Length: 87
Image 1 (cartoon, helix red, strand yellow):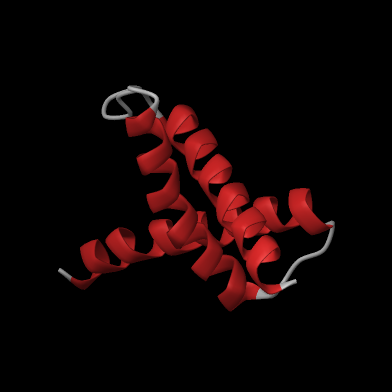
Image 2 (cartoon, rainbow, N blue to C red; image 1 turned 90 degrees about the horizontal axis):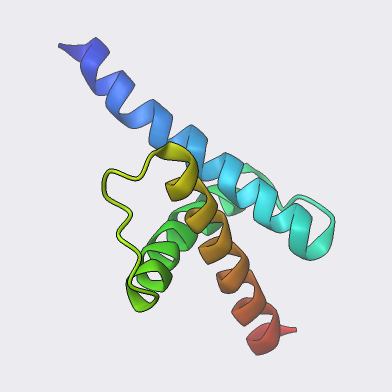
């Protein structure tokens, strides 16, 4: 049973870190650390879902690549807003 829990939690965490890393590299050219990348990846995933719903694009069943792209776009939007507010 524990191996299923590890599979369920490991991939979203690793994907969130990767999404945050890509967004940070695009926006600032440098990484922010593992925890910050995870935070940006998670928040960016929700922002990407909101962006896709505003554009009337259904992400359910579209495939991993489409979801990944919208998550990165959402993370970039979150970082852009963060820079406008706090820098």
